Length: 112
Length: 119
Image 1 (cartoon, rainbow over the protein chains, first blue to last red):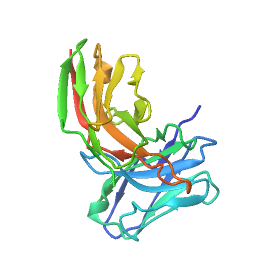
Image 2: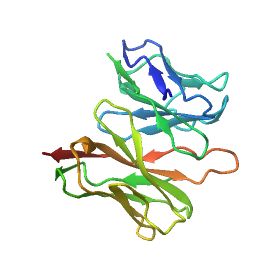
Image 3: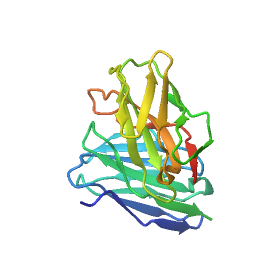
Image 4: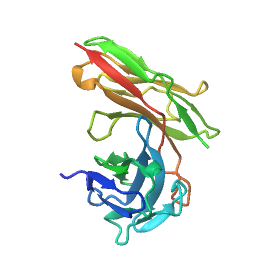
């Protein structure tokens, strides 16, 4: 069975550009999470969806970050007017609620 | 807010030997979950082992076991008979008991311990 997939795997953006990162969760998983992992650090929570509802967005670092999951499956994390400090690996995870979170391979974003 | 501390940035172990990775956490909650995740180089993060705080018995998964000391807020991971494939970054993580609103599912991670296995 397919795991969590993310695309693109690598993204290079010029400062000020907008980027969109996609996450395809495991089929049937109602919970979806986005985490940001800076170099040499542990992942940090960004936002959480239960189906299409965004129940927690307390970790989004600024209003330049926006996430959606309109049909309760695929999710997109959008970053507007990217800054160098946005450079990180963005991890997506999905789960069946209380159970184990399964992580995707991540998207490595580099902002020049 | 909960915090997770991993005080060992790097550890090394000889193949077939045993190694223990340390983790401490801070919380005011009485019911929660603790996890160890493994992140191999350029590969996906996978769950190694988990512990429910209400369970006194330490979790065990094959060569991996934990020493959970609730009063001391300590949660160490022991890897026995270390193998070359165990080389990775290991993260300790905390999760609250979900509340009625459906939030609190997020994981709070430590900074990680890079484990090297020497042949």
